[in-house]
Length: 303
Ligand code: ATP
Ligand code: MG
Ligand code: MG
Image (tube, rainbow, N blue to C red; front, side, top):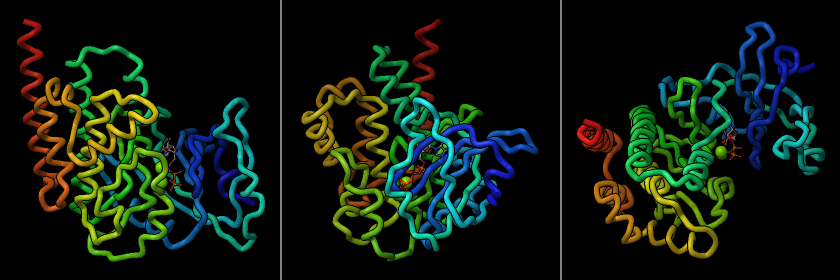
């Protein structure tokens, strides 16, 4: 017996990570779509849902409810969608394990990562991409400011964890690594989960070296995201070089010429010392000012 299959029609697999799977599911009674994330229940999972349940903000994926089941939903393999298939490792799971089902707002399937990939294949005018980028950055910062004001650190901000709502608003998701700002918890699990997979980590330097750190790790990640929103990164080896340079505040020369103001803001966000990075609230004001300047320029250009 499963509350999940009793109450929902599972429509598709939206994403699958090492630790969980997120399904799109339609509530049979309400006839409304939701996203249901299924994770193995443990302290971290309970922390994720515990935090998410206390947050209510237009730039944060909305939480509805959660429940526990004895097994993980295994059915449903969407034809032609590899994200819907399951790895064999899951069939040998611990039979005593419990699973947490987290019911959330269903966002669009296009994550910020896909947005970036799409932009990079289009040859957009710089001004258009700039305006869209600052609008996105503003909304993420707004969500982050709220998270910080509630005493939490997200710790895993990256484009695949940022979604677009049906209300067209940008939504921060994946609270799988959230922590209290004053916690000194074990970070081995943290490293395993977010992993230093690939060349493009969004983790702040102090987070990687395992020193103590604070909410400024989110500001660092945001700086990299803002850079990536604007700048088409090459692939392969070169990408790694540009990325690592950016991580140490060395943005490409052409970037600093084309995007002088953004360059200035991003460099502040990427400062090596966390205390030198701006607080989210300060950034909100800064970005707001910058967005207004751009709008005025735009108006002048169209007159
Ligand atoms: P972990 O990295 O901790 O293993 P995860 O990364 O698999 O977890 P999420 O990031 O929460 O878990 O979700 C995985 C993917 O599922 C997201 O990148 C996104 O594509 C999709 N997704 C998650 N939540 C939603 C939602 N509310 N609406 C639509 N799609 C979602
Ligand atoms: Mg994720
Ligand atoms: Mg995650």
